[in-house]
Length: 276
Image 1 (cartoon, rainbow, N blue to C red):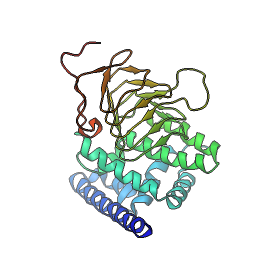
Image 2 (cartoon, one colour):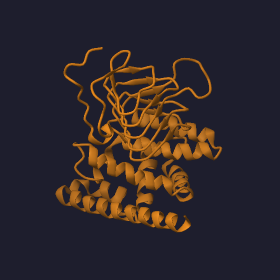
Image 3 (cartoon, rainbow, N blue to C red):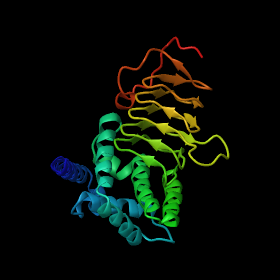
């Protein structure tokens, strides 16, 4: 088992190196196409020796304020990345997921520099690390800045997997006890929230491969099963069975069973004859 773990870690490190090389090529091409981009691209990509260093710089520059400056935040982010290499592994997987699923994404450089859904998710990974290490006030400061800068409010205690695509990100809310597993895609204005003033475990559990459409609200300690699809604008108050599509207010199952993971195909269409 130890040999397998080492082998998997080596593959993961190589994947990160390959991704960084690709981003470097994308950056060189961007500068060649438009010299006005030279200063920004060099500051955020080309002058950095590694992907973690560039990620720390990029997030710190966006989240810094009068209370905590960019060098201070970059130091905190670097500490988290060095202590928990799984954060970088997850970030690499997230970037590749965006490139594969988003037709508006032409390369890896674009989401790394500009996609605030990606930025909010990676900044949350840092705030979650702070939360787990007993630094709750700094974690909440990060949460506040993520909300202010990226318009996404993710509680530091929420547990998010890898291979997640948050498209646009504006208006996203994810509560304290929410769980989002691997390979999930969600669009703007999604809420994974509670139903009132209850305490304890009170937020949704989103299983692998789920696709959540724009404006959907999933409320309460309910499970949305693997491979499910939640239609745009739906309000989900009850558990959703695996590989099931739900839509409406309140959401109800429609159409046949899904035969693949909707999050990977990004197929947001619904049966033409669905009736709630």
